[in-house]
Length: 481
Image 1 (cartoon, helix red, strand yellow):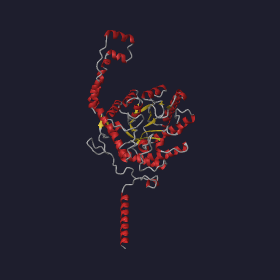
Image 2: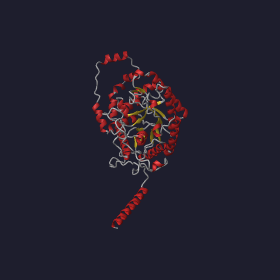
Image 3: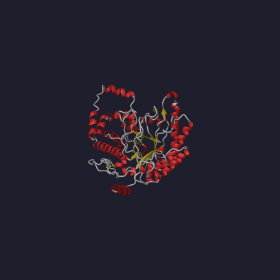
Image 4: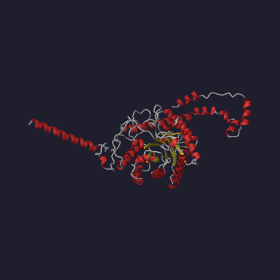
């Protein structure tokens, strides 16, 4: 009898615990469990909260200890005549933030976000899109970037792929509202096996045509969503060996492809900027837009200057043997600086690691170029950066973007200090002041021939060469950080 009474007590306690547990669950915000039986797996219209417990990120200042707050990025603060948000124009990369798995060449996925159901269905694509816009609103960013195949699955035919894309884009248009829009869109022309020999530079005519159709649709979608730019990243537009490659013919085909893109842009009334994103290699041995100078030369040769600008990625600059500052300045002085993919690489790792930028010195040099350019609108700073493989908490997505935004904000503040203080500018001016003379101006105008210069060299004798003051320049730079 006592055993029966004890069993009833235990059963009653279990029932009470279940009721209490259900009450807590029903009172809590809806979240998407990471299994196919969860609420979000039952309907594509599930509209729960993807980031419960994470508030809208606010500016709290450098003294804040809150890791879910901005310490340096104050969107409305005016620096050198512009609001900080207008200097930056931050954007979230859909492919890294919502499609990144943590996988690398040596290991599988490490990230299993709670809203994922393990499929690449249209319903799953819509769920990711809802997560994207919740994140944008909470982090306080007005722009996002995407590849067509990131946001919608590929079908068995081009027609089916386009239909899937239209369905997801219709939801994106609804979720954007009047404030948010794409900084840029693009077509993914490098993952699918049909593009193994390239897209616009493929040796196969049918592949070239398929790529053109895919870009046409991606441009339509970007225009429909109010995108401000359209990017071409030619991950497979290059070669593995010249032994089986007609490089001249491939370059001519690439130029024809770009001319067709320009014509279509004008036909549909797309007012955004067309951007080329240089990269030296990976996955190809040699990519045709190796760096900013190579891309600029390509545009000049094929009569495309004025139709394109460059999207400079800092990690790509590293791979090409340059600093990000060098690539930005090369683009700027050629009138081609259009957008920046804000990330950095690891000097000890030989591939494109796409890390969030956290180096204040590098960020300051980046912002010096942006200030000299007068800003980069309609471009901006897209976080083409991903969480480290070992970072697997949902809040890590926020922390990574916060530190990236704060780093560039600190860079802007330091660069503005250098500009306003003026010592570094004056050092550079003094270094070249001999060319401010009458003869120097004649040289810069192209009016001094070799005979004239020989006469002056004989008259002046051995030149006296002053110090470049490199250490002083570095001291002035560091004092602003």
